[in-house]
Length: 412
Image 1 (cartoon, rainbow, N blue to C red):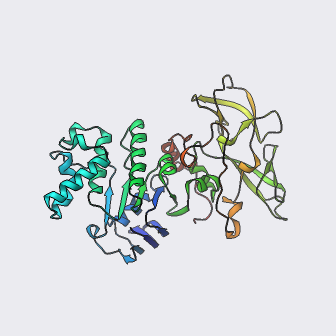
Image 2 (spheres, rainbow, N blue to C red):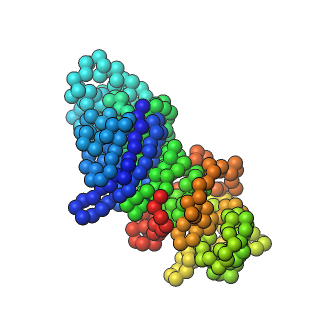
Image 3 (cartoon, helix red, strand yellow):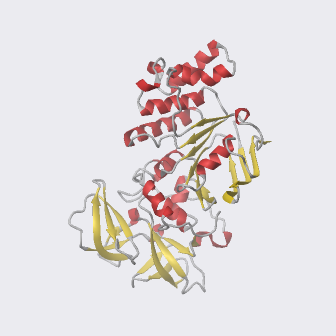
């Protein structure tokens, strides 16, 4: 059992400030996932927790003990790296047992620990094989087994699935989830750029951006109530659409006059005096549906992608226009070049002013998020609402690095 507390943690390389004001409490037994675009510092933060990078500011505590200057071997932590880093001349059993041998454990204890890890990870038939005789997924399980045999308080995973193909990633992700279920008292911190991994594995997600924490919360809370436009567009695939407009009428239901001439009813309260406020209306592609009535968006389809389960419609793919994506359930043929009218439930819409959700303005504390009990077919479902999210966050990282999607609003 291990609680972790990071207080004003910072990291700088000379004059370059990489991370600052990292404040995070991780409860014993939690599965925490760090996500964010490439270069946001998520692996650096993990390595600081492990003791592989020096903390240049702030304080790290594990079970109440300050760990800033404690060597990695004495922190009660085991780390699984992106690369397997297995000894090629050693068998699976010897790879897993190496740290125990260095620690002077008895032969019987080592055998019992490796047998237990092998059974847990379904590696028992391969304990006497060399790494070259294993598949990529099996090698990654050996690397996880090497951490398990040490029986640490905290497990750290640094993008452990990024070297696997799509099918193996799914299978190994399920195995990691089952592993956590079998060790409920162990704290796990997992770094990934893949939001599907984050949504399906995490108890809480920590979104990193701009050198700090953008938002911390349960997967569905981040999906359903993002604090700012960056989180809104980073969590969810395809990214949330942002349609510019102005507040027309206020109250428990807000009317937004969109720049394209249409209007939208939004189930987010606004105050007297908010009339004329410039806002971005946020609507997720999976929440859009065709309508014969008053649309939230109307445009000519530039491109379609038929995925079987869903069809993606792309609008405004040219320059100087706001791109919009819709994700419709099922197969929709013959829409290229056609004008399509789309609407969305007012409760599924979001409002952002200067990059910040109106739900969070003035530091208002919100009640616990209650996700909808059901969503339209083709929308986010399954564990933590992520089953319908393809893993295309690599493309999202590229868009962020190119300046097409930018973090906005305060870092929380």
